[in-house]
Length: 64
Image (tube, rainbow, N blue to C red; front, top):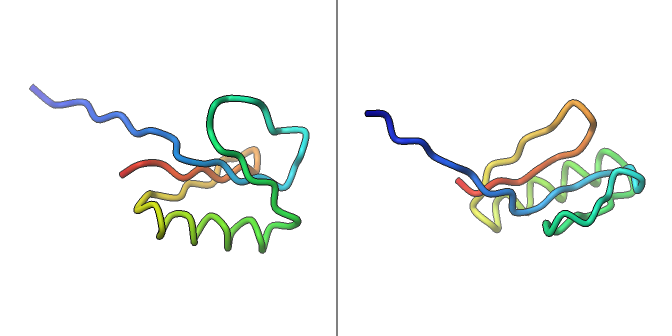
């Protein structure tokens, strides 16, 4: 039987303040896409997580 793995979202990074909702996950507002990508990369390294870009422009960092 294949074991199912669930990943937790550790953080979200966005440049659109209207997309921030209180979801119990730290959400960081970046000033532009360059800063957004830099923050996501640094958080991914520090937290040991994976970084994914969503089609709506939000970047999420998940637990490995």
